[in-house]
Amino acid sequence: MLNFVNPALDFMEKGGVMLYTIVFASWIAIAIIIERFWSFQRMNVQRKKLMANIGASLKRKKVIEAISVCDKISRPLSRVVKAGLLRHDRGKAEIKEAMQEAGQEELTNLERYLPILGTLAYVTPLLGFLGTVMGMIRVFMEIQKEVEFATAASLAGGIWEALISTAAGLVVAIPALIAYNYFVGRVDGFLMDVEGTAVDLVNLLSMPGEEL
Image (tube, rainbow, N blue to C red; front, side, top):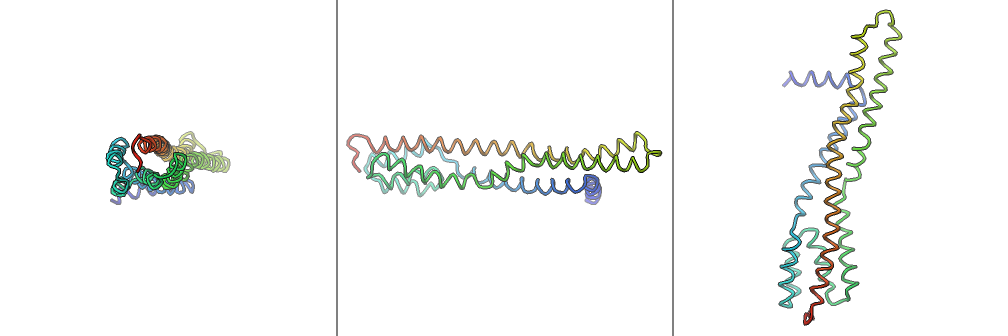
């Protein structure tokens, strides 16, 4: 274990303050990615299957049963459908409005921490670049002090140490950006499902002879 820890600490020391900042940012990014991935996995529900079950209950004119189906599933999309079912005796516009309001509430939960993840994906490469610039300044200051003893090897050693923070920033930013775009895509997919489900529910409630 110590054989791994000591080189890692030495590596961190060479990277400077910015490398510590980037590592801290990576911990935050990892925590957000794990938490959001777990949350999005829990929200999975098949829209067609959900609406088929709702439709079966509505055909039997059992709105309470349809609401119970939503409660049993207890996913963001099912809660949106429930909001529409609770307005089943109102007009189409009010049903859609209720579902859109419920969708906005769920959207707030789905987008939790995503702005932070997006910011980390954008900022960490800049932190890495800043660390490299600071490192290069330090290298050339040292060379200026000992110009007579400066060699290509010492210059190269100082440069690669300065570049550590840039590499670290990119290592953090790339997966963070990929994860951010993935989660944003999932959110967009949820919004499309809300719109489609609103239309489906209104059509079910508007079927001839379906006064509920």
